[in-house]
Length: 159
Image (cartoon, rainbow, N blue to C red; front, side, top):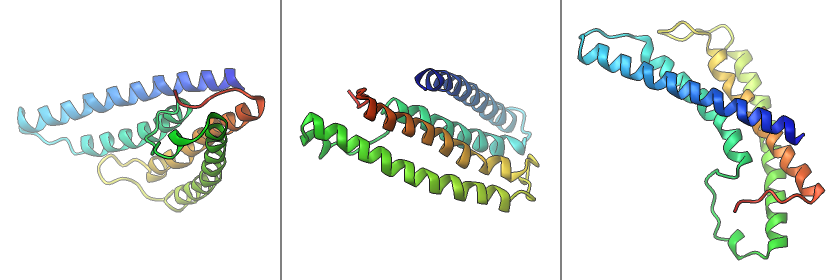
């Protein structure tokens, strides 16, 4: 499972870099068109927003796997090492339960909006909303990896 997770993490990092690069280029083109050439390109704002949404949801799983998400460490810093690992295990279980709910309702949202398109780019909004269940499944995969690591005795807690 670790090998699959490593490959997935690498692919996600690459994809997020591509998305953020495209986002930067699109924003610069939109700004240049508006203020230099005095022409507005209507889809630039919309596409840049959608790229940011997708990059955020895909990057969330990678940040979780590396334990780089924002956290309140006040209580966990006071715990002994064994209790610290148990606290992260409980956190992984709670996150997994939450993610199942997020994925379920994310799929429902995609289905409910499958007949709508965005205003400027004319992209089906279900593609935009699909970032929620896709990102949730990736996050859930990494959460389950962390739970299995706990049972195997591997240490995957933040430094």
